[in-house]
Amino acid sequence: MTIPPRIPAVVPAGRMARLGQPVLGLPGGMELRPWRLSDAGALFAAGQDPAIRRWNRMVVETTDDACERIARMRRRWQDELSAIWAVAQPGGEAVGLIGWGDIDLHGGSAEILYWMLPEARGSGVVVEATRRVSHWALNDLGLHRLRLCHSTANPASCRVAVKAGFSLEGTMRSALLHADGWHDEHLHALVQGDV
Image (tube, rainbow, N blue to C red):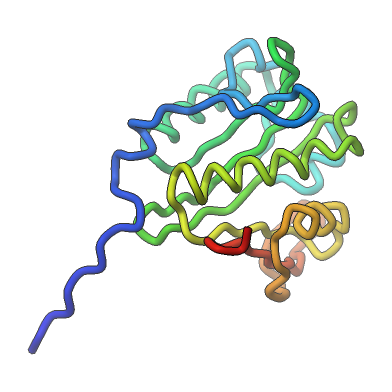
């Protein structure tokens, strides 16, 4: 019996941790930067926002939880499992979160996650941030396929996906449990060569 050759990793292990988390600029002067312990209040506020709670399962209930979550974001970067940025004015407080979870360096893929506090919604910043982190994931990190999944009951996320260049690939039935029950989800993707 012949054993097939092992396919090499798309992104070598250790590459992401060695890169260090960059600050990424956005049009209009906003920036994507690593979360700081001083951002715990914004993370706590997000956990109290009804819209964020509705669409995101990972919310914090206390400022201590927020500090632990920020520390976990740093560890998960070093462990090459996720890459999460704060959306902020330069030198200012965080008004949103965006980044990649479920990073698979060997398989060359990741899934985006994001939310914006009420004061940042409707400004187009989430679309620009999605484009920017997608460019980073495909071109700087070297991933091949990026996923954006959202409840079919969340048309705002569908608009973000389309405006950011993600193609709708289909509907996953009863794919994610939200507080109000199981939701069908749209699956959008962006792959190397799409942009």
